[in-house]
Length: 391
Ligand code: PMV
Image (cartoon, helix red, strand yellow):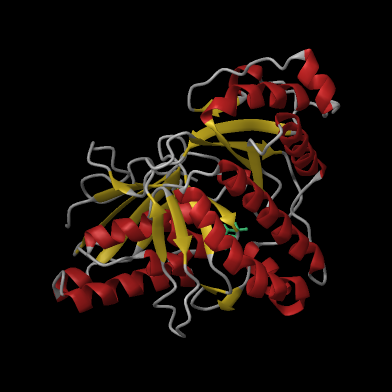
């Protein structure tokens, strides 16, 4: 058997959104996008892989449960990794012929609608690249698993270039700046309760591409300018500019969902209340101090600098009361400052119903995927799951 490779990989949250595919099969986007990679100490996917002449099938376990290996996206990632290994002559043919075992888990609830597929595929592809000793950039292979996964291959702030080539070989992610460039940058993820069955990103993108005129306008006019400006704002640590572009881009993405036909919406009344709160807070401060962004679901990601965190958490606790006060704020250590009467009056917002925000994850910008060598592999010495779920 090969050695077991174990990797942890991060979630990323876009500030310039990817929405729409130029090529469905190869997952090539219609537009560039930009994201921040979030700390794996708070949220991460973890994957262990190994190959062996003793294995009779390729097998995969997700969160302990055996799943089918036949998913086309999974197959595409493994095929491309092996082709790279052949091109780089990094392992021999015998090693390439051995079957593989993959065991993967997330340390955050998949059902919370957080970017679990991005972390999951970035983790899988990085682990496979290490197993097959690949040296070149693998973001274009992670992209074949889930588009946004290509951005999770790097830490800090990341730019996914749409590319122009038909085969997608130039549709890759590059790092704008590393995780230590803007050390004050923080993220609060507000997990919003929502039981509705939502439109998948794949389906939503297809409807938007086929029907939304606003999408065409966005791709031609807005994204190129915004991408250039937000990259500059990140390099210059210009929070006001960063915040304004982030919020406008999130709003335009959700406007495109409504401009699609038939329309669909990911944000709920609670999401809209969060938007209202952020704008009122920024108005009181006299400049943008908090930026919101929403993906294909109702959860908010607020970007803000460390000095704002305790004040903003105090207001969140007031506006979104909870019944789980001891575990409402998860992640990095912090204390909420109770909101002052004066600020509450200026905000003039009433608290929502209890638990409309289920909990908050406090995190920061972090590094890309890393190999774990502390012996906490998800596969045992024979290459089988350490903690299988017995059904
Ligand atoms: O990679 P997917 O198929 O999960 O699509 C992600 C789409 C958004 O999260 C809405 C935007 C983005 O750029 O991450």
